[in-house]
Length: 175
Image (cartoon, rainbow, N blue to C red; front, side):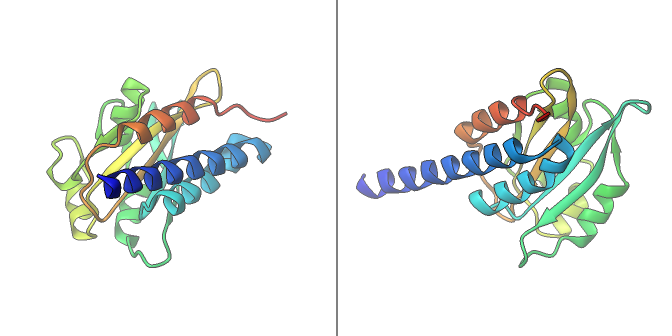
């Protein structure tokens, strides 16, 4: 029991560190697009996720496009990143599209076994399993999605999803 409490406290401390890092980055960036790459890196480093990607809304085409990606130095996911950068997701399709359709965070314990994950084959090839993502807003409208991947299968972490849902909704540009 004591070990479980210690593990939970450590997890809570990491969540808090991630939240502070993200809040600090958002507060110091002149515009949201300047902050997003730092947010992806901070979440990966603080919470032990292997890579992340930034999807922004192409309003004219009504699709999400991958505009940036980051991975931990010891992780090689170059093919997955290349495929992601070439892909465009419509509302409801793939993890970015399903987050866009609900405008809520989402979690996939193991992407190669998810029925709505078109990049499953390349994710499996690169050893990616768990994924989560959340929407980003400018305070008024939906702008895009941040998504993250782990080489481990992970059960959904509701506290992480709740925190990122709050963070993603607070993204207001600094003037």
